[in-house]
Image 1 (spheres, helix red, strand yellow):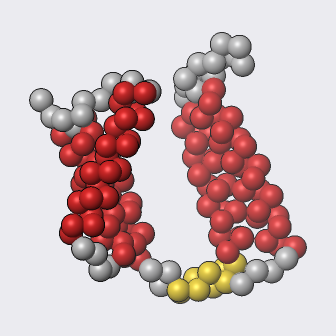
Image 2: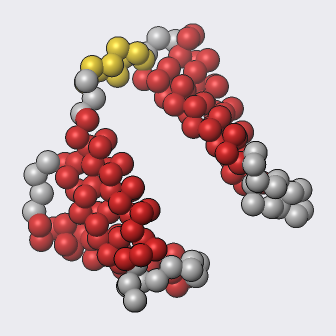
Image 3: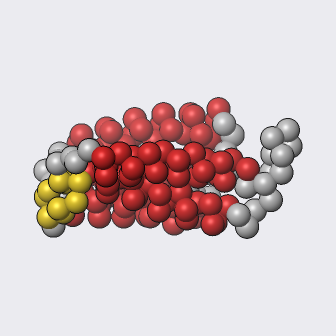
Length: 147
């Protein structure tokens, strides 16, 4: 796929679209106050900051013309997005470890050529390190393995 729009303009539009979606979705949640934050406080203000940054990048793209994006590889985009979707769908049922291994395995198709041994070592290291951070240090309520 060949894209003829400038990189800054495309990035600014993407940031603004994601920010607007975040603002719309987080507006349904209670915001609270800075001293007593509710569930919607952080996503709302993060989206507002992202909208500001996206607006600056978009405005800058009209002042200074940048080179176009050019050729975009679709396979890596689909592989990484599919990996994230697989992880988010399976993490509660299959556990953090199996969903993480599938995330890494599916996302690895983005590069084309790969060695299964390297993917296995990468998956074991990343899942182990991520489990230490998210499950044990941050104590997220997820199971490591399915029951």
